[in-house]
Amino acid sequence: MIKTIILAAGLLLLQSCGRKKAGYPGSRLHETAETIVDSIFQRDADSLRLYGRPFYNGRYWETLEVDDQLPANSIYKKLDSTQEIFSGLELPGTTDKTMKRSSGVEHYETSRDFFDGQDHYSRDNIGSMSNCKAYIKRDTLHISIGVETGFGGSGFDIFVFGNMYITMPYHYDDILDSNEKEPFNVPLWQKLVLNKKTYSVGDSLYGYVSFGSVFYNEYGSASGQRAKGFFRAKIKEDYR
Image (cartoon, rainbow, N blue to C red):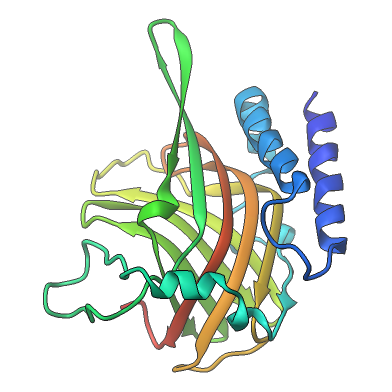
């Protein structure tokens, strides 16, 4: 069963890589791929652990795409009509209230809880409260799209080195646990489009991302992760 589902996801990835700039979101292909994520998560999350890797492992890095016309996409006009969402980590008086929304990414997390003798699944759109930040550390571009509350956070990171990238969900809280494990991820597909191949501090970054994965957090708990949408940020020197 698991081999069949992974093969199907692989075929979807190959097809999506062959698509041109004509259509980013909303295709029947992506609808099918998103269904596959939930199916894999619910049926095979435990057996997929073997394939999980941390973000710095080279197994799942892929080649990014470049589209210099990305800033002209109409989605950014829609984002201009909405005020930015600021995280709980940003101090009062340190934020620019005139800033416009940086992320239009929908990011759904499907989690599983066991009670009343059976599994129960819930899905949340983390993207509805997320913002986008980007900075350069050494030779790596780090893009972070998520929500921080001051007591924890959820979202995903994109690491770009040269023309290669990887997507990596994240989750953290303020609970100290000596049994915490290193988080790892099993990407089922991922696609990244940026408006430039290289950036410097102060540059404006525009991008589109789509990915599906099964993510295992620091407690070893699995979740289905699906995200797609456009984002933007001003490149900074550090994560602030």
